[in-house]
Image (cartoon, rainbow, N blue to C red; front, side, top):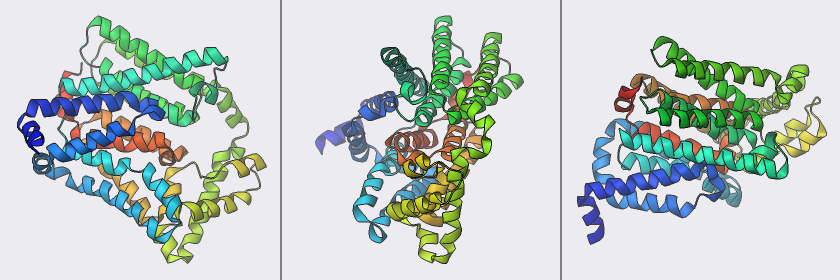
Length: 400
């Protein structure tokens, strides 16, 4: 107890340790398989032990969204009572980030100035190294396309890289030394090339959306010509490669047989039957029963190949997936987080938060992001950091 009191009284030491933990986690996030859970757990214990009294008072204006995150996780705990205990327990372990990260950033310090830049650079550098490792691995295996390049689900890979791209552009819009601008340009090209090689159509859409957002931004606000050229040319090149990508060509030639259309249709058919069962409508079917119901409906999709019918077990849409497994209440909770955060980001002119919400919404629409550990780290971490601990008004002052 004496040591805790010592650190409480030494504010600079406490804030430095806070920053160290955040930098470490943001750097390791792209290497999600290698994130030591003990690091996050230690940070969690540190926050609980050292800072909660002051931040509870400072963050009163954010308590609604804080409790919304906690309620979503607590709501997931109800599934232990109504559905298969051990299967639901495994799902709750995946969603532990919805409990841990909001508490960490709600009770931790607010970041601004150079601290925010350190955190952004830490994540961008981690993503750049992830891309470099994927490129070297591609040379080693002579596989430069789709899942063989990404080394994991290409949609999840592109989600991380799309945010890294957005953060890189944000950094380029700041007043930088020439050598820093050159390094950021290298990062920008690396993320664009990696997204192309991963060839996730969802990744292409989120990349185009981010580049379009910043194209509008630099059109109305003066900035260096080289930055304008880099953003506009990146947008045009990405749109060209998206249109001519082999996987997009397959979609253009046979759009009605895109697997996702059938997956969404099967998911909607499950939801249509939920009003017949009031408990299912409000609480969902749970993981085991929800997956079973979905696969039953999927078997009725006559246009889908047997390979997809046997291989796929989720609707590739997080909103549909949550409705089926968590019911109407779970759907309202997750949708509320998007609505409230969008309003806050617009009010605070928080461009990074808007970019994150846009990327998350696109990937939620085209995949079941929260079913993976990669997504269950990514979404609650950046959502909590950007909502509770990121001071946009101060950091935006240095934009060109």
